[in-house]
Amino acid sequence: MSDKKLRSTLTRYRLSRHKLMIETVTVVLGAQWGDEGKGKVVDLLAQDADMVCRCQGGNNAGHTVVVDSVEYDFHLLPSGIINPKVTAFIGNGVVIHLPGLFEEAEKNMRKGKGWESRLIISDRAHIDELSHCNVYTLLPLVFDFHQAVDGVQEQERQQQAGKNLGTTKKGIGPVYSAKAARSGLRICDLLADFQEFSERFKHLASQYKSMYPSLEIDVDGELEKLKTYIDRIKPMVRDGVFFMYEALHGPPKKILVEGANAALLDIDFGTYPFVTSSNCTVGGVCTGLGMPPQNVGEVYGVVKAYTTRVGIGAFPAEQNNEIGELLQSRGKEVGVTTGRKRRCGWLDLVLIKYAHMINGFTAIALTKLDILDVLPEIKVGVAYKVDGEIIPHFPANQEVLQKVEVQYETLPGWKTDTSAARTFDELPENAQKYVCYIEDHLGVPVKWIGVGKSRESMIQLF
Image (cartoon, rainbow, N blue to C red; front, side, top):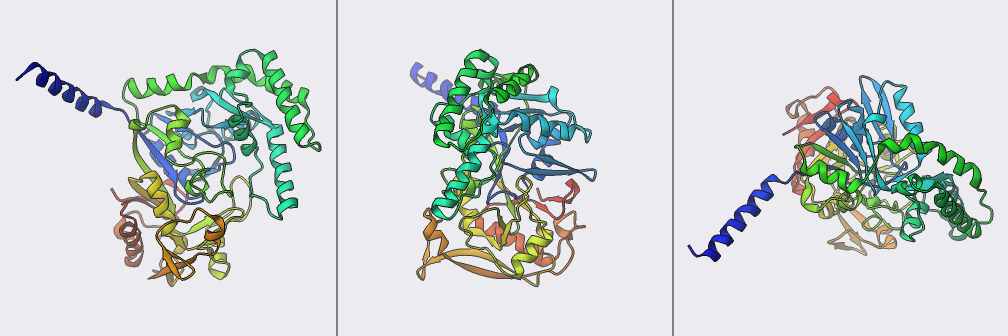
């Protein structure tokens, strides 16, 4: 063998060895408009994890986990932190409202779950300054005035156009806007020169005040409050990129990434403009944690067995009738973050397939199957028609999406309580057929089926 061929062979060998040695993260993402039950799936996987990460969003997200009949609500903290052996990491793609972070942590601590020694925060995260106003490290900070601005913007939209976006008013949009405009403040800024931070904070507040004269901002009060968090947060802050690199290249670890919101709320791929301000799809994992795509492993899409949406915006499969009311009542469909009732409708596989195209789901977790137990028949959306013609894609334009006519397949119900089932074979035959129908239509296997609120009610198929 010539030297050239030998070098080529050795190079290919090294590359193949390198690929085998690459550490990957497991990702859990919402496949609809949020509220699919991601927290429960994360809680299940976190029992065997070493590290759980949040990569985007802020405290506009809401995950509920039930352990030993105790209910825990999470908005900023990764819900996997409930496992006492897990290290939790909040990445640079997250926007942080510091008062909300500590309030949430203390609330869960009162229920017996400690956390501070196990939480790491990227210095590149932004602060939600005006949450009324929030703070950033290399994380953007959400300030209390961001939240106030969010509310004012919603009022103006309502007055000018007759409709708002239905935001959670947690300051998320204003913080991400400041980040894109390069005027945001990060955690690293708060921990550096506080005098410089204060000047930039005042300038940012002044900008908002000039745009919204009715806005009331207690600048000095906000700064005093932020200053009190410095010593408390400092031990938690790391260079996020270096931290993730070490985690992926050090001793083997099981790393779990917990997505917030969902595919149809993604700023680029969601039902714009009725979306959130971050990337809730798989690309947000890399940009929000500072890691390359080769380190993304399993991507689990969480799908509710029917469809829900909070707030306004197109919802093709919505049922404004007794079916919608039954799903809302049986599913207790009320937002964890907003307290608003969720709109309900049939499962929309056009929407799920679109989410799969973007995220490349390797498996699906199907949740809340038990809510369908009382129905004699169940409809599933399988195609969209516009002006009498079937369209092969999910429309980007909201006006087009508003007028689509959903084509349904009707499947027989099972009229049997599934909440006690713990294996696939224990499910009624028609419930099994419903699951298989979803798998066949999407070409993605269902790995878990949820039939209740507890960990034990998640049936694992493989």
